[in-house]
Length: 234
Ligand code: CTP
Ligand code: MG
View 1: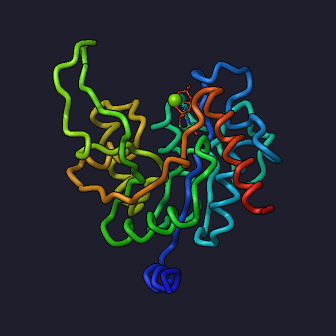
View 2: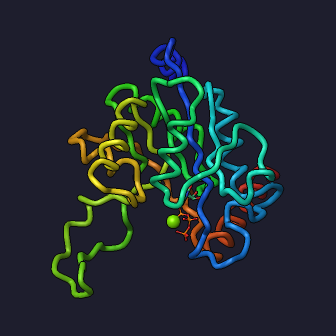
């Protein structure tokens, strides 16, 4: 039923995905960029890619790749930029046919689910912009110069993940405005859309949709996969 509602909503709409996989993985501290390290039976990036493909929602998926690794990747692959913002903009502009809706996802998050993708598409179709977020278990402290000046109410804050999904023309406009204003290193597409004054809807993500940043995250991802395999075989 739910799936039918989405199909009704997006009938006649063109939907694209930009998978960001051009980072160097500096915090991971490995010669191989983290998205190309093996996780279970395939490279890390291929987990998110397979999930995106398997939903059947996307008319086009562009893989924005680390320039040194393009030959390792099958599909519609383009070279990324020096920053995430630049890679995202290059991905948007490389789409061969202008879509109505575009979903942007970090390849470093292997455990994106079909449900989160569907919730993103629905919210973006309805409101123009959607961000996947989860509550924070930790208290957040504001310490811009190393000393705490505020401890805000935790329940008012969420942690932003990806995917982030938009009306294509809105996101493109947000990127162009950011460049005009000299903003070049935003780690987040929603931030650029907010600069236009456009509100962003929240889609509930989950802890498991973690971003692989350090080797500890990769160990956790391996453990999550082992637990899933054990659940399926029992
Ligand atoms: N990314 C990208 N192009 C860049 C930088 C980042 O496509 N120039 C992608 C990464 O490949 C990743 C996602 O954006 O899938 C989120 O970035 P992050 O986790 O910060 O990855 P890296 O930038 O590779 O890692 P680090 O910041 O530790 O160098
Ligand atoms: Mg980075």
